[in-house]
Amino acid sequence: MAANPTVGGDLLRLITAGMYDSPLILYREYLQNAADAIAAQGSGTVHVMIDRIRSQVAIRDDGTGLSPKEASRRLIDVGCSDKVRTLDRGFRGIGRLSALAFAEQVRFTTRTCATEPVTEVTWNGETLRDSNLAQVDVATAIERCTTIRQLLHGDWPERFFDVTIDRIHRHAASALLNEDDVRRYIGEVCPVPLANAFPLASRIREFLTTHTDHLVLDVRVNDHDSPVKRPFGKTIPLTDKYNAAFERLETHVIPAVDGDEPAAIVWLAHTPYAGSIPRRVGVRGLRARVGNIQIGSDRIFEHLFLEPRFNGWCVGEVHILDERVVPNGRRDYFEPSPHQRNLENHIGAIAHEISSRCRRASSQRNRLRHIGVAINRLRRARDFAVSGYLQPEDAIALVERERQRIPEIKQILTTLGAVTSTSDQEELASFENQLEDIEVNPEPALNGVPSDSVATIQAAFGAIVEAMPSDSAYDIVEIILRRLSR
Image 1 (cartoon, rainbow, N blue to C red):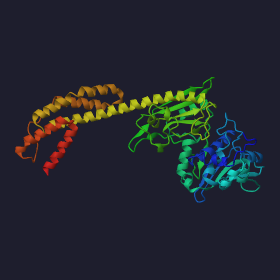
Image 2 (image 1 turned 120 degrees about the horizontal axis):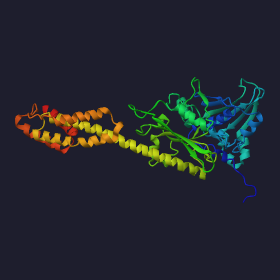
Image 3 (image 1 turned 180 degrees about the horizontal axis):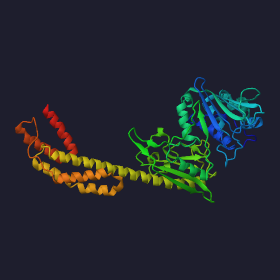
Image 4 (image 1 turned 180 degrees about the vertical axis):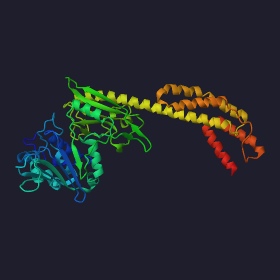
C-alpha cells in the first residue's frame, strides 16, 4: 500500500456528472437542503425563479441561512456534512454540487442576520471539467474550482440562502427552464402540501402528522401566486372518457426489526383498479418518501409486486421512519441491510394484496363486459327472429339456442351481485320474456331479392346464424342485404 495515498481531483467530476441522470433532480437536492434549513425554524418559503433568457435558475429560501464561517466551511467541504442523519433530509454533503453536472457555474449566497455580511461561494463547472484536474489531489482541485467573497452592499433579505445556477447547458435547459415541468416535478417529488381537491387529503395529513413531523414547504415558482401542490386531484383521469374515483383510504404501520418504534408508515388510496394510471398524472405507483421527499421513481417497489405492471395501477406512499433504512448515494433506492430487507418483506405483502385486488377487479370488469355482450346478443337474436331474413325453422332454432344461455348470464349477475346495475337485471328479464313469447315471422322480408332466390338466401343466412353469434351474424346479413339492394 502506498505510504501517502492520494485522492485525485477527478473524483469531483464523478460525484457531479456521474451521480445524476436527470437534470430535474437538482430541484430535489436544493429543496431538500431548504427543507432542512426551514425545519430548524418551523416554517418558511422557497422561491424558484426561472430565467430562460439568461439560462439561469435561482432558488432562495428564508430558512436559517449560514454565517460567514459556516458558509466557508460547509459550502466548500465535500462529503463531510455535519447534518444529523436521524434529523436531516440530506446528510452526505454532495447534493449541493448537483447543478455542476448541468451548468457552468453554481453560486451560493447566504447570511443568518441583518448585521452580517453576505457570503458568496462560487463553484466553477468549466474548471471542474478541465482534464488537468485529474492530475492534482482533491483539495487542490476544490481550491481551483471555488471562490469566496464577502458582499458588503446590496439589497439582501435579513436571512436567506440562495442558489443561483448560471449558464445551464443546452441539453438540460429544456427540462430545467420549463416552468410547467419544474412545477410538475416539485409537486411530485418535493415536500409540498396535498391539494384540498384530493378527497383523502385531510385524513392522510392526520395520519402522517400522527407519526412524523410532516414538514411541507411553501414553494413558489416565478410569479405564481399559488404555491406548488402535490398532483393528486379529485379523481384520476385514466382515459379521455373515464375518471377513476378515490374510494377508500387504507393505512399500515410497519414494525422495525427491533424496538417499538415503526420502521415505516404506509397509506393506500384505493380506486376501482380499472387499469394502468398514465405516468403524466404524477400519482401512479407505490412510492417511497424519507422526510416527505421522494426516493427513486414511481417504480421503486415494482419488483415486489406479483406482476410489476400492477404497481402502475395503484396509488400510495411508504414513508420511511427508521434511520437505519438509508437512501443510497443516488437516492434511487436504499443501502442493503437487515432493516431494508425487513421493509421489503412488509411492503411485499402489501404489494401482493394490491396485485390480488387488481386481478379481481380485472376479472370483474371482464365479466361485466361479458354481460353487456350477452345482452346485446339476446337483443340481436330477438330482432333476427322477427326480421323475416330467416326461414321459420332457423329462426326458432336461433331463439332456442339463445334462451339456453340465459341461466348462465343470470349466474354471472348473481356472482357479481351489487356491482351490476339494476338495469342489466331488468333488461335480461325483459329479453327472457320476449324470447319466451316471440312469434317468428313466417313471411320472407327480403325486398329487392328475386323470388326464386329468396329460399336460397334465407338458407344461406341460416347457415351464417348457425356458425356464429347472433350479433355478428346480424351485422353480416345487414351488409349482404345492402349490397343486394344496390
